[in-house]
Amino acid sequence: MSVRRAVLVLVSLAAASCAGDGSQLPDDMMGTPEPTLTWIQSNVFGQICVNCHVPGGAAEFMPLNTASASFTSLVGQESVEVGPMLRVSPGDPDASYLVWKIEGQGPAGEPLVGERMPPPSAGEPALPDEQIAAIREWILDGAPP
Image (cartoon, rainbow, N blue to C red; front, side):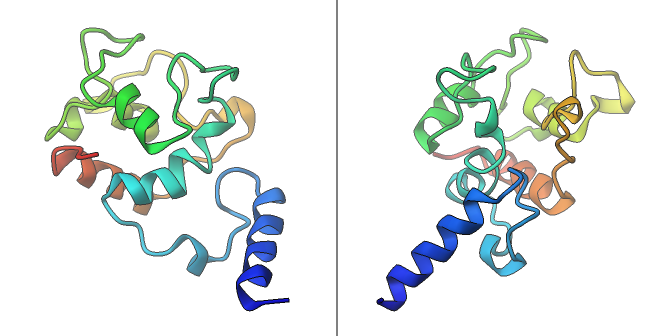
């Protein structure tokens, strides 16, 4: 078996046993968080959020299953729960509802509508601070595709 094929088999096995939050993946597999949609898609939206945010899923109204779908669903789009606030307001993470949802509160500790994401009711742990920081920085950088 080639080295590449062996790595693919190991990655597939790790993904199949993953809880969805990356906790089952070795630290070096996720890599250092980067404030890019590519990294966020691969390590957050595409690993955790797709448990619900996928066509046919519980939150199919906001698909996050590809980088293109995530960008279209988030950047410049009005929040359903707290309109006219934007889900992602490019350049302003504190005015982005996505940040409120993943941090579990609004500015000055204001309560959320609904649950923190990922949802504790589904047994999902909060995102690690490093992932939240990468998302905040991506937004601060203008949330480029």
